Every structure is written in structure tokens, then in C-alpha cells.
Amino acid sequence: MIKRVLTLLIAVVIITCCFCACSVKSDASAADDGKLKIVTTIFPEYDWVMNILGENASDANVTLLLGNGVDLHSYQPTPEDILKISTCDLFIYVGGESDAWVDAALQEATNKDMVVVNLLDVLGNSVKEEEVIEGMQAEEEGKAEGEEDEPEYDEHVWLSLRNTSVLTQNIADALQKADPAHADNYRDNAASYIEKLEALDKDYQAAVDAAPLHTLLFGDRFPFRYLTDDYGLDYYAAFVGCSAETEASFETITFLAHKVDELGLPAVMTIEGDNHRIAETIVENTQSKDQKILTMDSMQSTTAEDIANGATYLSIMENNLSVMKEALQ
Image (cartoon, one colour):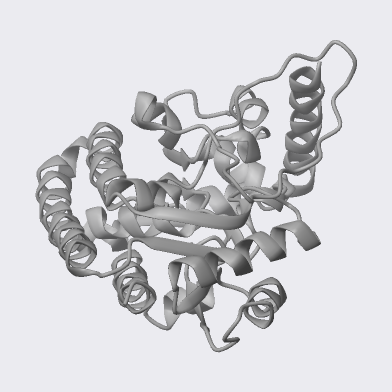
């Protein structure tokens, strides 16, 4: 029922877009120049595409839908976004619950030759279900009568360098299909980029192997499960990665503060953003009250301005490694 309503809403939006754009449609077509049209939902996808395009980037129009800092979990497409998806040659999206709107948008696509990459589908059995571990505050979700429980998958697959190698190769294959004329370039660029990913993956493993501690504790949401699982790290956190909760209970704060003391952790972790109140409260409730608050970037709110200032997937993951090293000392 929900999917049917979404389909109807998307169809109405596209029809509206067509009426609104009819006066400029011929000009837009003339200005197209036959460039490859690529639409990505989140920053990591965008950056992977730009690295694979390499010297051919000027021959493509690449759109980042979530380039204004909006979080994947709260994003709603605009009519302009839906129209871009409808006519693009390659569309890349995560494919989790936050992308429930995508199926309806794709059903209304006017480009029937569009190549689509769903990150979760590509990774298949490697995708993990969200888990609520000891001390973590579960979300309270209303459920309609008779509604069955469905597994909720952790969408933050891009925070594994190993996943990213697989996804980069798949996107390169999709680009070769969408633009066969430059297939060799895409293949070579992807191979070069994957080498960099694999080198950084080894740096992460070496850092973990050399670290005296093997636990990260987040006074925040926890989108880094794929990363911690890759390197055999343990973790504690206030909320799961896709949680919309912003207030932690007394029990959650007390449990996490006790864990900091018990394990002798030098830092309480947060993700990007200005609100670190939960982490601060955890520190205030430890015995020594002197732990650092360190931030790892989950790339869920990277903006177009950040990109213009030089942010890349690799640079952010390198910085995350430096922060992680400090937290494990």
C-alpha cells in the first residue's frame, strides 16, 4: 500500500515537473551536448564516480543529491531531483530503508536504458542487519496491528574500505556499460583507485594490530559497524546508526560511563555535527572526568562546499584513521 502511494506521488511530481519545465525543455536539450548524466545520492558515491571518470569527468554531468548537508535518513527528493533521476544514464543509491522513495521514482523513469546501482544489492550477503547491543538504547517504533517484523539493515556500507573496493569495481562496470567508448579508462581508473583503498585498509589493520585497546565507545549514533567488524574491534554506543533518537536515558549514560571506567578508555567518540552533549554527559559521569571527545566523520552530511574545499572519501577515511588511533591508545 505504501509503495503504491509513493508511486502515485512520484508520478504526480514528474507530471508537474514536465508542465513546469515545458517552456525551457528544448533549451535544456540543446545544452545537453550528449554528456553522460550520472546521479548519486550520497557523497561517497559521488567521489567514487569522479575518481573512476578521471580525465573524462568533464564529459559527464554528475549530480550529488544530498550535497547541502541533509542526512540520508531524513532526505526527501525535490521535484527537480526526481526529474534528474528520471532522465539520467546512471543512477547510484544506497538502497536501504532511507531510500524507500527510490522504487517509485524509478518506475516513472523516462530513460528506460538507465543503468542502476543499488549498493546493498551489490554487497548482497555482506550487508549486516542493525544490532542493538548491551547498553544501547533501542528506538521506540510504532507498528500497525498485524504488521510483521522486517529486518532493518545497516545502510552505512561505505564506511568499510573493503566494501568500497567491491562497490568501486561495480560502479566502474556500470560506467563501462553506460559509456562503452571510455570503458578502458574507467577500468584503469578503478583499478588505480582500488589500490589506494587496499593500501589504506592495510594501514587500518596495522594500526589496530599495534593498538593496546580494541574498543571504541560512542556517545552518539553508531554508523561505523562495518569498519569495526572489518578490523575485529569491539564497540559500545548510545544508539544504532540509523536512529533518530537525540536524548539518551539515565541508564544509557550510566552504562556507557561505567564502561569507559572499566575499560580505561581515553576518549568518548562522536560523529560529525555540533551536538556532542551525550558524549559530554558520559565524560561528566566517569570517575576521572578527563576523557577526550573525538569525532569520526561518517560522511552523512558532507556538503558541496566541503567538496569544493578538497574533501574526498580517502582524505576523510585517512583522518578517521588518525582519530581512531588516538582513541585506541
